[in-house]
Image (tube, rainbow, N blue to C red; front, side):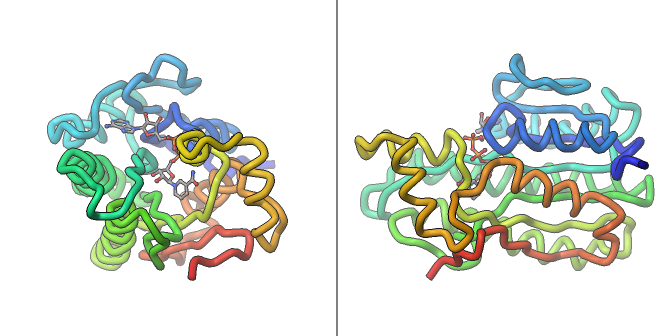
Length: 245
Ligand SMILES: NC(=O)c1ccc[n+]([C@@H]2O[C@H](COP(=O)([O-])OP(=O)(O)OC[C@H]3O[C@@H](n4cnc5c(N)ncnc54)[C@H](O)[C@@H]3O)[C@@H](O)[C@H]2O)c1
């Protein structure tokens, strides 16, 4: 059977994280060559790795070109890296705001801007941005995170429309809760046992469980593949039937 991403070359950010590691494995399983990027890339199991801080403009601007150099071209980018700063606006620091805007909004914008001409040149370009269900409808107590993910959703719709004719499809995934370090640390901060908290949370999901990273990675593979050839500028909610609000 032909693999769905045979011969495609992909850059995945946040590749050392929970969803990122699943993305790298899923893309490679479908035949893609993958460059994994993260702050610390040493544990990433990919065809090539790059490390760097996405709060630095130069790092973001150069990343698609560096990935293309590492793989001999670039067809796919998954803007997956992200941070979550918790708490109401009145408790937020300047650092919470600027870090969240830098990693969650400015970095994917810069990477999209630099990647579009590179991935479009092959004619089968695809960019998948990681938004959130909270980017579509906000939940309580996380205004900065929700604002940044709403910006990613809007950016995806705008760029998806503007560049559909250039040979690149740009879409976003909007997960609800996914069992990763990002979710687990939130429970730890509140003094809860992450395993039992995640099991309890799963009971609130119509499908009966919190998403596993693979549940999100498989949707990213689909969006990057030819099977999604008529999908651009779309926000795909992956929530097990549990919408926000
Ligand atoms: N886990 C969830 O419930 C959930 C739900 C909806 C959306 N998301 C989104 O999915 C994406 C992946 O999240 P995850 O749950 O795997 O989290 P995670 O914390 O496991 O992984 C995030 C990765 O981003 C990297 N990163 C953060 N700041 C960086 C920087 N300045 N430079 C380079 N890399 C940086 C981290 O090192 C980490 O490896 C994020 O964009 C997140 O907002 C997660």
